Image (cartoon, helix red, strand yellow):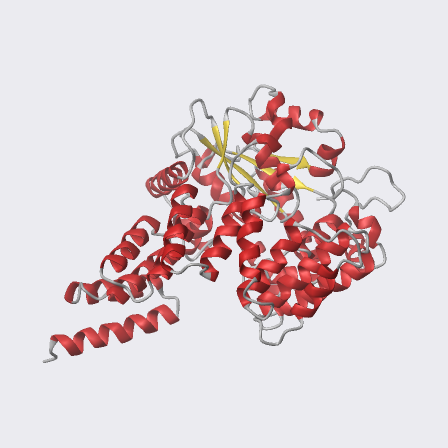
Length: 515
């Protein structure tokens, strides 16, 4: 019979293996069993917080990290950083997140992780001077330091070079060549250089830097598999087939009660204007911005696995329970406000999950954002999307193929739910905003409010790459930007034209979306 010490050691080893395999549920079970015998084990509390965070149990994760701190965890600053990440990224409690980062900095002044996260939080909240201050403090660590290199890339966005001979551009390239830096950091530096050159009109040099950055970011990741992506989309379409002519699309799914505020899904291609649209709608008193909620993807990966096969056996009571759980978790993340009728769930990749959203909330509205795919592709090249999650974002070929799959999904959902799935054209909106916005508000049953066109005055947190763009008045600089990159984008154009996508020519005056 094993003594308590050997049993604790066995549980600790097993939990470590589960964490390494990202088997969160099993790790949580082993860590709880370990802590039942050794409640004083601060590292086990810390690891439990880590596993709970990844499992989506955010409140419990906060409690576990707090217990690790009470028990004297070896690195308390890291525990505060983890609590800050949960509070900011998942629970939208920005003041509490900032307080946790302050506690980390009180323990370890100029802690690189705390300063980097603090700068990022200031950016999300629209505090440019404070973000610059945090990043500049990191530069004192020297260009070879990982946190300093990340800060340099972010400062290039906040304080961009004024001319092509600005020393900052050379510095970005030099630091990006440092072999001691992680590939992700080197990629960020190249992408920052590319964005800065684009803003200066140096299109050829910008494109080269962007391609270099993407190549580094995706070098050690699995390549995009078009056939697997097509099979995944086809499985979803098969799970939500078009109805016979005499069947109302949402009729069989009307099992979930109406809930207020109601979810409003905004989805489509990344970089197609979804953040802008969310901000515009959030300026309306009847709409609250939920941001990029992870609730549907977590549901698919957990309760509904394997998805979409699980949809075939999903009964009405289960649907109601899932809808209530989604709504409860979403509303808990919203700022308190009276008179709100809708909250937005703005994850572009939720386009794959529109069928699930409509099963959960049959009366829900879905807005698909549209933009010229060449501008979309350029903007994606400028961003460091997670290579493990978005392998298609590495190359123009991958982006083009993904665009065509998104186009197919959007057409299917619009045919299946013609009254509830609507398109919103980014290019048309920035060219003449009032008409398309009035049309969308009418479709949502909302009155016209001129505050929607003053969206840049909102003081809310924006947690996407468009955080600074949506704090400016409406502008059209990025609409039609592809014209400056004509030759580089020719392969993408040829792919899309061959697939039947209607693209405006470079000589056309008014670019239009093509999804």
